[in-house]
Length: 438
Image (tube, helix red, strand yellow):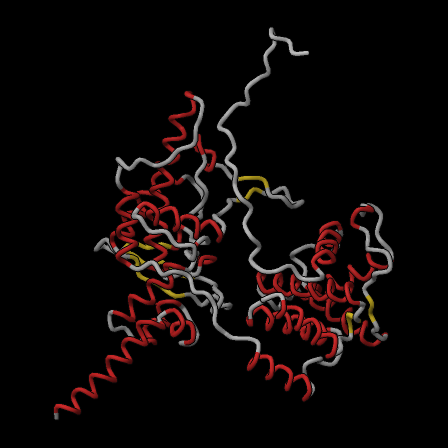
């Protein structure tokens, strides 16, 4: 019975938008459920976390599979009758144990953090496949690896993804002193057939943001009269919301200009520090790039910053707060001016940076201001655009390599495929025309 004296309360805030769920990027693999279970087991284990490499993950998950540790919920226990099966002898186990112990004692990782995470992720897929099919995890047999690869191909995974999985599996076999499952002539013939008949090396490329687009985007962000969308807030918080949007526009203008000038990878861009930016008397500047994907030794490289970029960096620095990192989240009431507590057990304070995913979001948001919509903007869009601009203006592949910090010209050829093809075609037909008129 309804009580008219106490009407139901209306929900506060804006009504939620009904968003249709996105279709999955790839079809689900047959072992997806096993992968989910193993991922949960890994997170529950104190000895195995995302920072560990695949060798540690193997040992820990093998133990969990046979004798689940206390505290692991029954809801993520191994399915009945499914176990990770190993056929390692004592000498092979000793090889892996010695390898892990020596690396820990000497403080050696061997791989960059992203490479270790990729290795562990690919290895978990192999473990899930073995659990699903009953295949032996280690030593890995070629016939089982072939079935795994065929399953990835049927699941529309790309050539680069499959190559990375094969590398991960052979790498862990090597660490355990097991033979390489892809070393046989039969395996090599299979791989050649696969590349010829079923796989291709084409990859989607991020949409490039050239200097013309960058200048238009930055001009809009600099406009003090730009009407930026702000969230609904209480009247007393409205001023803080508007101020945060103004600071965010200054940050985005500086970030987009710096990203184009430095032609950086998104992971390098979010790690930019104020103390590595240098100003020259003419108003231009430079940034000293430290360790990178292609400079693991950290020998460094100076890269040029335009006067316009330096001006935007200085405008942003004036309101950015005390963080040593140039680019970070902008929070209301200047909450981003304070470090946060680390999530580990050290109780240290850290200054968080933007994530690489947020770089692509910033580009898309700024591009919409000038009427550009593209689903393929990513954190590398300015890197692609800078490479294309250089080649179109007559620059050489070697100059592009130096600009982007590439070891060779392979990525330059990929990013600037269209202008390079145009240059080659114009040169070819120019020579033909000259020959005809001679």
